[in-house]
Each structure stands twice: as C-alpha cells, then as structure tokens.
Length: 273
Image (tube, rainbow, N blue to C red; front, top):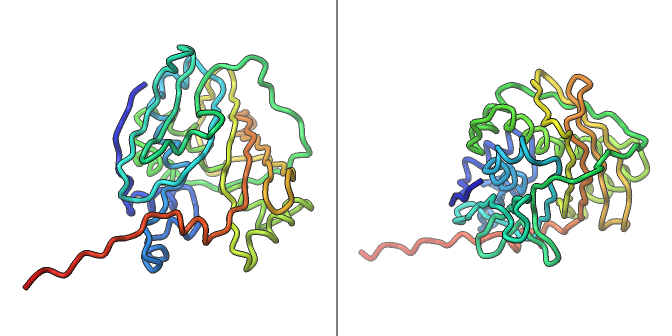
C-alpha cells in the first residue's frame, strides 16, 4: 500500500486505449488537439494504476472494490495516486487519484478496497459477450500500470476490459434496453457513456487464472432513468471460473460538456527576435 505521483502522457493513454480497445475520441490526441484540448485520461487507467498500488492487500485481504468517479484528469496533469489504509477503518484501503480534486471520490463517498460478508452475485437473464484478447494486450496493460504481480495484473485487466464487452453489447443490442442505449450514444446526439460508480465482488480466494485468447463476460443491462442513467450487471469468467461480479452505473453525458472540461492546450508565445 503506497502513494505515487504520476503524469499520464498522451503516448501512454494511446497505448492503454489500444490494450483495452477503448475507441472514445476524447482519448485521441489528434481529435482533441484539433479542438485545442489535452486528451482525457481513461478512468480505468487511473483506477487500475491506483488499485495496483495495493496489490498485496487486494489478493490477501479483500473481496470487494467500490469505486466512485467524480472528475476528469487530462494528459500532462500531475496526479497523486494513493492506496492507503483508511484512517477510520484499518481493514479498508482507500483509493484516490488527486490532481486539483480527487477523481475517485464523490460528494457522498470514496473509493475503497475491503472485505464484505455475503456478497454473492445475483442471477440475471445473462447474455454472453465473448471478448477476444491477445497476450500482447495484457503485457502492455501490465507495463502501463507498473504491475509486477502477474496474477493481479490479469485480474485488473479483466476488470478494465469489461468496458469493451459492455460497448460491444450496445453496438450489437439484443435487448430493448441495449437498443435504447445504442440509439442514445451511437447516433448524432453527441452522447457518451461514462462510469458513475461500480462495485466489484470477487471470490474469497483471490482468482488466479491464465488468459489465453478470450474472456467471457455475461452482461445484463437495466434502465434507471431513460436516456440518462443505466446499470450494467457483469459476470466475468475464464474457462468457466468466476473471476468477478460487477454492478456498473453508467451515465449519458453530452460530448461537448466533456470536451469543455478537458484541459486547454496553451499556445507557446513566439520567441523574441
């Protein structure tokens, strides 16, 4: 458990997006640079890096990860990532990623890793979304978050890669709710889905596995507020072994609002002749 100061570079963001197959243009230096903005750091990049700081606690003392996303981090920002014992509860590790504010803290709660009793996953009308993956993706992901524990790196990759499966479900809808979200974000309305909060439960015995060429994500979407807030339930399996259950709240946010919050690129003044 420790603290680390980092600056996410544009190149690292591009490489992370390739590893996790994140195609959102707010992470593209060409697109954002054309708008005079720095690229936005993927929330799962900052979160994965932060969780890796508590790798030992994650695999020996916990079975639950609770995360809240609050603000945005831009490329070039100096960010303090922390995974430290909660001062009021020594059995919990508090997660934070602070630039001007803590992007992993909401107005009501903060992100943490802890042990929760009776956190069995619920049964839903799951739809299997199998996601192909290569060894190169996992190695790049581990390198970017500075992971040295292979088991923890693969576990964190499985969590981050769920986003790819969720977006695949939206692009290839099989339910009314998936089609509704597809209509919302894949048209000309200029709306993007963003994680609001997530809760992840994993087995009491930390899941050790080997990712070969694919991962199975069982997904069920629910509507909380039409065209605004949705919940995705996810069960991840590798070769029939349950890796985690997750409940993910997604909000639809207008692209122009996201871009407005991105840090502006300051033009350098011409040198005095």
